[in-house]
Image 1 (tube, rainbow, N blue to C red):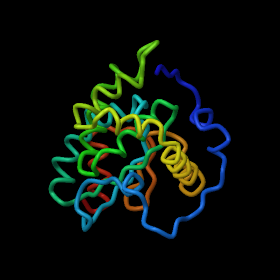
Image 2: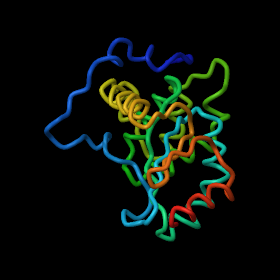
Image 3: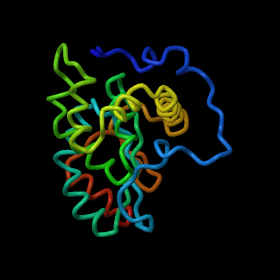
Image 4: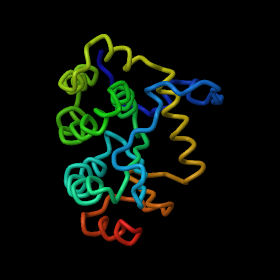
Length: 202
């Protein structure tokens, strides 16, 4: 199944514009928070990202490893991840990532960012097949992968979250970070980002 890039709205058509309704029951496992770090960390960072964003990939591969070692693993910072897909390939990849166990989410997303040039930007790429290579390495079988890929309800949930972020937090670019309530758009080098974390109390 070969897919080319189009807008995320064209992926789900009119369904993307449908109103969302709050559920009384517990959220599905695919719709729960994805985060790393201690829930009691003094600094909370929310990252809005797209898996096909080169700037997000740059941050993930060059800055985040140091941030994780120096701030997350030491209990100073908690990272919460928000899908903000810029195209339908990013949306599909986000759906797949959320079908993995929560503990496998961060390693899988980091693996996709590290291999972005392999699966995200090749002309004529069979995205369905190329993303599955990485999902399989993470332990996902073909049946689960196909279910994730075709989960239009999850796609709708992700797009609803994106629309809410645009409306409530005025998120309009990736990556965008909210550090203890303060919005900081754009990828940064490690020293700049670490400085913001330290200033916030990390």
